[in-house]
Amino acid sequence: MQLLKRIFTPLIAVLLLTGCASMSSGVSIGDTAFSGQQIQKVVDEILAARKNIDTTQMQLSQGPELLRDQAQFLIVTALLDQIAKEKNIVVTKADVAARRAEVVTNVGGESELPTALVGANLAQSNLDAYLKVLIISERLDTYFINSGTPQAQAPELVAKAVTDIANKLGVEVNPKYGKWNPTNASIDASDATDGAVTQLP
Image (cartoon, rainbow, N blue to C red; front, side, top):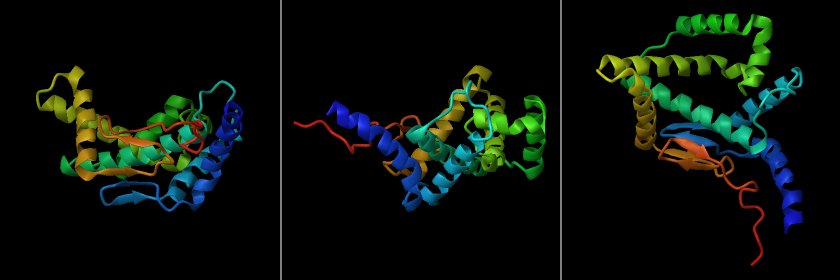
């Protein structure tokens, strides 16, 4: 069985990266849904970007972990968008553009941005969404501080707000990406083969 596991585990990882394009279900957050095709498209974009970058010194997500990370990103994006609506937090395109300019400067210029994105396991197409998430998170932090919460405890309340809204809306995750953990609003890893290979009795 150990030999079978060694054969099947990398095979399943390949199938997860190439076969998910045919999956209709991905993740859903309340009435918002992201298909398997949408998640796979982002993964394909990240993998394509890696081909043009020296990644030898980078710690990069691979296989099922990469899929799980991208599914998690979409969930967090949807959850924070909903929180922003409820707290009347408005993030404009100008806000995102200003933050993007800061990021470009910090990484050493526009030419260095692709390398930074690859190192962060972030697709170019998701950069604006990522920056919006950061801004919402920061403003939530400020919201709680202005409400009397000590600065050191504000991040805990932000995390709790995300968990609470996830439980309120309901989150469903295709088992291919892992198992949804409602306690901390994250996708836990499944076993390496997603149950495809089991021990014989």
